[in-house]
Structure formats: structure tokens, C-alpha cells
Image 1: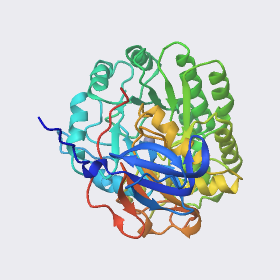
Image 2 (image 1 turned 180 degrees about the vertical axis):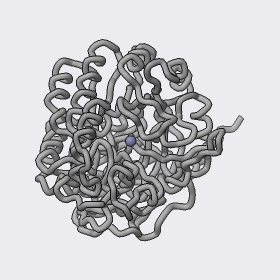
Image 3 (image 1 turned 30 degrees about the vertical axis):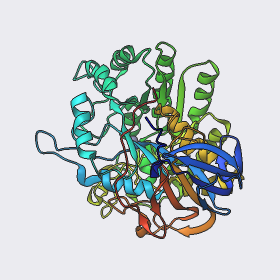
Length: 475
Ligand SMILES: [Zn+2]
């Protein structure tokens, strides 16, 4: 039988993405990223272009790994048995387009406020049906861990959810705002952690407890709820500190990685620092809104700034930045949590009668870069905070999070010098109500590649189709 050489398929044709500023785990340097079959084959020296490869030269534009946003509320799924649906709050199509435009190539969806909440393998299947054919970037979904005082705990569903592919679980230590997603008390946390022990998947915790919130709120009496100061006073630092202290205590008892989502109080940093020094499996994120805004600057009635825990004061903001620089805070995730504009109740402007959640998907890179650059930082932390570390939390470090061989060729082309003002046209999520409208930001995404193919270009818009896939944790 004659030997017939196989012709290389178009998929095998090598592409090379070249720039004088490529951000890899080794730093920022001139390089040529060689891509084959949608994955990074190698990172070569600048000018080292394989024969026959298709060269894309970006000059001095920065090449970063595609961002991984591990905290997003997409709010999509089929409707529940009573016909309830929150798909009009956001949705897979709009959320993943906003992500693509912001250089985010992987999203991890929260187990609420979708309907049904992602509390069982069947609910995950419903979410997958809602996502089918609609995702412009890759995605995964966290499972939910719920129940308190013996009410509707889902500890029996957790193993099934892991089997079905969730990379970890999210639980609230305080009312979530969604009646279908019960908060967990210490007893339920213990049941949850006992099931998760030794399985290698993290528990993500909304770390506020109710006691300090209720006490502080009862002291406010007839305070003016149009004032941001009133809202801030209703959610004191102690609510976060008590919750984090409990989680640290439990991390010492159970073999489960515990991740604190959206740390807003810098007073928690010494606790976290000590816990990590003691070798506990504790990680933590903060969010762009806590790094960019300050309570003193929030106008009365501006409910688009409401989120929980709340944006705190300027001195706290500076301490959070220091926490990131020191590595006590591991990374930045958006907690993009939109709702229909009417629920923000902007007309009345009362913070107690407004949905809590900030819409920011797609803005994390310029927002974080604006603050980082202003504080004398370089480009490398962007890759760690917005890509590598969240990828590690989601268990996908071998697929995502760095410009290194074997990872998917998810690449963001970023202009770090341009300064621009955010308008509604720049927001690609469903409802264009965001505290970032009018913000002056430094740095802009020029182009986003998913597995070596363009999914967004600032000049041409979005790529030809919804090329996103659901990911599974690294084997
Ligand atoms: Zn959230």
C-alpha cells in the first residue's frame, strides 16, 4: 500500500500573534505567540516566525491572556414551574457579548439569580439548555449550596452537581435577595463542607452575616435612605468580619478550599493574611467597584452604585489595592449583577428599595488598569488578577489563564495608553444602567481572540457566531 501524506487541515495551519509587549508568566517582553489548532503551541522570540505561518503583527499593542471572570450573574435559564423567569435581567447572549468586548474569554455563572437556581444536576441541565448556541465566550456554572436550620438544604445534591461538571459551589451567609436561594448558617455550612471534603472543589462564600446588618439597620431609625451614607451604615464592616472569621475557623476543620467572594472591607486583610500564613486553604477576590469608587463620591439617590457588601470609603479603597499588591487578595472578579432598570428604583433613589448589584461586565480590564497604572503598577498583575488566578479557582489552569503552551489561544489585544469616556454604546450587556457611565478610563480592548479566532474587534464588532463552549475542570 502506497504511503499517502496527510495534508494539513486549515485547523492545523499555524498562526503567529506578535507584539513587542506580550504578557506571559515570565513578564512583559517582545514575543511571537505560535498558535495551532486553537491552542498555544509555543511562545517564541519576537521575529521567530515558522515558515508558512500566518503572521498577525500587533506592533506595540499589549497581548494579554483572555480574561476569566469567575463571578458573573447571567440570570438566564428556562423558566421555573410557576412561570417565573429572570432572563430579561441579562441572558447568555448579551452577557457573553459584553464579555467578548471586554477581553473576557471565560465566564463562570453564579447559581443565582437564574431560574431555576443551580441547586441540582437537573437545574444545571436547564441552564445548559438555555445557553445552547448563545455563548460568544466559554463558560461554566458554579453550583449552589443552600439551606439553614434544616430548611431545604441541598447537601444531597452536591455530589451529583460535581459529577455533572460544576467546578465548585457558592453559598450565602446572609439573605441572598432571592427567596429561592436560602442562606447557610454554621450548621448547614458544616453539612456542606462535610460533603465537599477531599473532593478538591472550592466553596465560594458571600461573607456577610445578618446580625451586624440587622443591629446597624435598627439603629438608623428614620434616616434618609436616599443618602448613600445611610446604606453604608446599614452594612457595617463587622458583617463581613464575622463571616470571614467563621469561614476561617471552618477552613481549619475541613479539607475544602474556601474562597471569599467580593471582599469589600480592608479590615479583613489581617485575618486573611494570618489564615494563609497558617497554611489554611483560603483565597479571596475583590471587585472593580471597590477599587474604583469611594463612598464619599457617591451622590444621593444614585442607586446604580448599590451592591452588597457596599462600596466603602476612599481610605478602605487604598487598603484594598495594597491587599492586592501584597497578594492577600488573590484576584479581581466583577460580580456583574444587573437587573431591569425599574428595580434600581432610580426615580425614588432610596437605597433600601433598590436591587443590589452593579453592572460592569466587560469593563474590568480598563477599570483595573486605570487604578493600577495610577498607583505605579505595570502590566503583569493584570494577567495574574484577571486571568491566571480566577482560572485556578475554577480548576481550568491547564486550559485558560496564561499565554503558555497548551493553553487555549485566548488573547486580548489591549491599548494601555488611550484614555476614553464610557458611554452607553460601550456597554454590551442588556440594561445600560451602570455607575461607570461617564467614567474616564485608561486602556481599551482592541480585539479579542477565542481559540485563535476573532470574537470581537473594536472596529468590526463581533465575530460571526456564538463560538463559546462549556468548559470542564482540568482532568
Ligand atoms: Zn454575586
